[in-house]
Image (cartoon, rainbow, N blue to C red; front, side, top):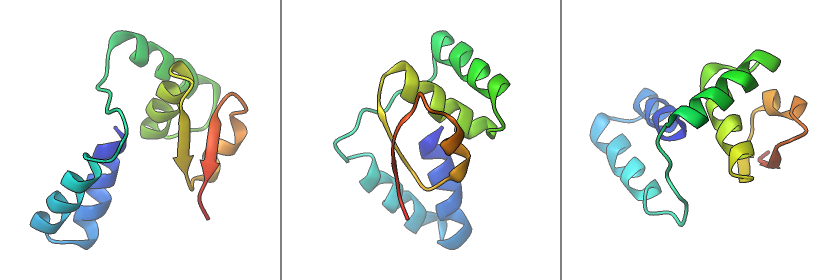
Length: 90
């Protein structure tokens, strides 16, 4: 979900080829890319039901809490979720 959101933001400001090149570079960062599964889906729905997050943000917050992962973001919507470990960008 996070990669899709990044991809569409890139496509809004760059030609498609440039957006794909940037996305390809991001996929080589030292992070784990996780695709959806039923447990994540259920947790994301529970997160979405308890707050005013967008669908994409609920998926990301759900995964971060399931994996006890650090969520790097700049979206004030995440501030309401105390269970998240975050690094908030300026």
